[in-house]
Image (cartoon, rainbow, N blue to C red; front, side):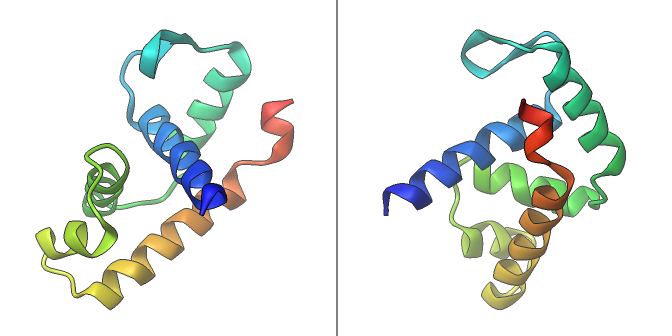
Length: 102
């Protein structure tokens, strides 16, 4: 499904953006504007996730693992993996408003 692929790519960039240490560049040398810098600070301060949750998101969106495979590496069954993924993505969606991008 093209919409699912687009959504996955957007989440992939968002996850990379959250975990990135360099404050001036994003993947493929995109310059980070002031709005995105504020969004990153908001996400880093308000996105409540454990170290395991963050590792899980990195495995899925940076390393390209399937959700159950990433969860399995953390000793989660596939249902826990899917549930955790859904909750984390829902939390991100609530934190990122359309106003953050305009």
